[in-house]
Image 1 (cartoon, rainbow, N blue to C red):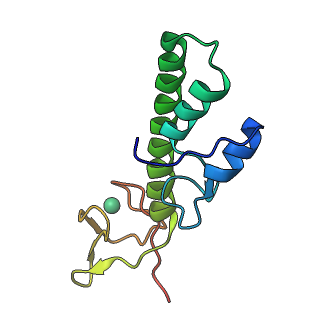
Image 2: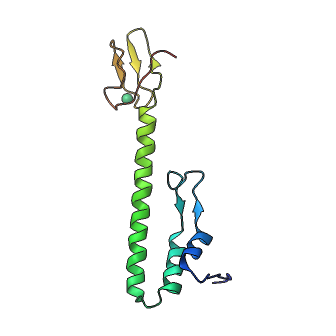
Image 3: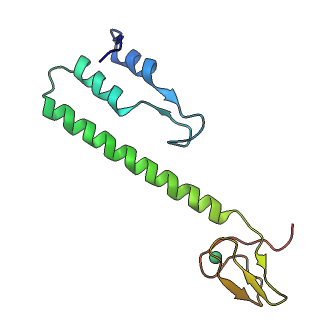
Length: 124
Ligand SMILES: [Zn+2]
């Protein structure tokens, strides 16, 4: 593997060694994470009585959970953005354009775009 692997006696030390805080919140809300391949290495080294299929199954589960987390993170970001009040784009005296979906709405100055749900602000 071209890398000098260091396997401490205790698997928890292995986790501490190879996990990192997702400070820039790229993958999570700033949680501590460990790459899936490191989990695979840990399983192979510390739990060698597991069959290769059991290890594969566990890696598969971890990947699925990682994907679910990423999906939830994207949804959360989208909801945050939608809930952050944005000024409508003024079109003329009576019609306003939503800054998110670009649809026009007239007359009533509501707190939300009636098409996409974007929170709107009318004053600074
Ligand atoms: Zn909209």
